[in-house]
Image (cartoon, rainbow, N blue to C red; front, side):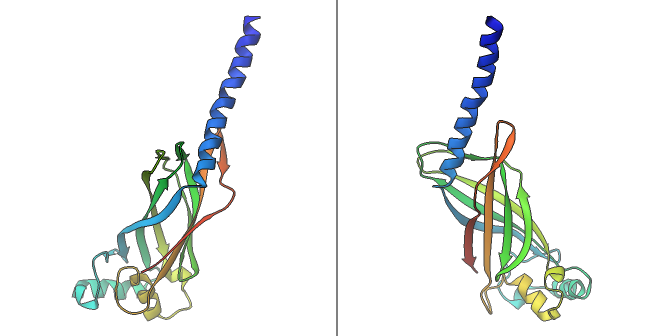
Amino acid sequence: MKIKQLAILLLIVPLFNSCSMINQLASLRNCEYKYKSVTDVRVAGIDVQNKKTLKDFTVLDAASLLAAVNRNEFLLNATVNIEITNPNAGTASLDGGEWIFFIDGKEMIRGNVSKKVQVNPSGGVAIMPMAMIVDLKKILGKENRETIAGFGLGLAAGEGQATRVSLWIKPIMNVGGFPLSYPNYIKLGKAF
């Protein structure tokens, strides 16, 4: 008789845990998502985070950029930090997620976040960092060199045409050892 009770208990405990996780996933729906910052922006290996005009670039920077444009790759590296605010009465939690990153309406890259993020209830805030590496030459291969360079520098430079970025995020949680995806992408947008 005790074996039956133990077996039933072992089956019921994971269900309670799963219900808790499903509630946390449901509370993600009511969370507020916004761009906190874009950090560690590097184009062709050059830190462009604080460069606002062409005068901010050294001669070596310009030579490195020109060499990168003429090579077969022109890498844009950045970390996009998403701020998640939880207005719910319960904790919101995710074990990772899928994301798609766009610049000026062009899909740049898809990726995954593997870091667990837990957002405390009643106004709790957490940051979800997403590291990205995009080869602009592959994405914009048919464009001329000036367009490719301008596109890559548009996130950091304050001159010229605004760069619009958007990010679609689909949170994922583990429920009973199985990944459970949020049903739709959460869509964020921002112009720089």
